Image: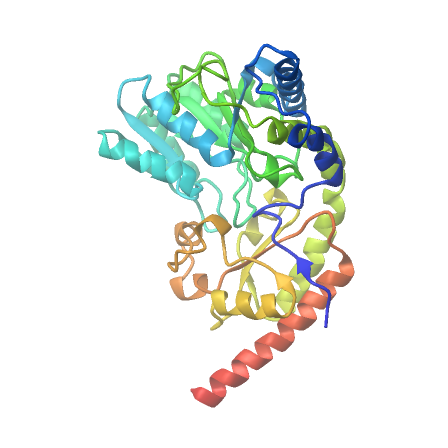
Length: 388
């Protein structure tokens, strides 16, 4: 029996032991509310302020541009809904492969009178240049294009897209969900901001930090209406007592980002080895045509006539934790909207399985995975032949 192997790091990463150590004082004796004026409160406030500086430094932002949230979903909602509430209704454009926490608030705005357009992607999952150019001519007020897709790992040239938007539609606020990219590739808000990106979403638990902490990095020229009214924390944009321990963990995880990125070259080699094994088994690898612009740790594949959910279950029982698409939408049995947008046949899309590698994974684990997958495929196809 093989030792259990975790291959689902795009869903969440293990908490780094050094991050936990930084958090522990604020889970135990450091119990102060960061808004309180006694010593305990001042200690908590100083910790939050230090973490804000750490997050800002990791992405080349200023500390005043960092708004802490409960995670990526809240940060995306804060931008989409918050910016929309402060401007006249018009067109909201977002890529057709966005995470549900961009798509769903956009649809809420549509019910309130906004017009929506889902920007098309090509068969490799990259923004379709012609459709994007046509979209900009319609003068959108808000644009959201993710930096890296959570399922395929395909990255977009967000800086170029934002610069194009500023040239054609200078009044648009441009947002990018960088949750999957941050911690795997270098992300610099100052460079992106100079190109025309006004807001960026981050999440702690994708880079060895705790669940329950995220941030919206936002250009202070962007006016936002808060989602949560109350005591006025986070410059009045996110009321509520700060989750000090999680914020501290987020900040400390950000100090380790360069170390994580340095490991990505090794993970990319593992990805290539994994894909070679998958190709030998006859798999289709989604987004492979965008090889030079994919996250180094992510492989999204399907095998002919094999159901993805069934395969994930079989692999789980064999000791390999993988995903059938995005963890946040695993309850939805429909084919991935990302693959549908890429024009993948629905029958093949239903077989989609995602492997996302992390710092603890090894070449031996990849070899074992390919061997177990081969055996599993033989069993499933034999069963199909017997019952067919």
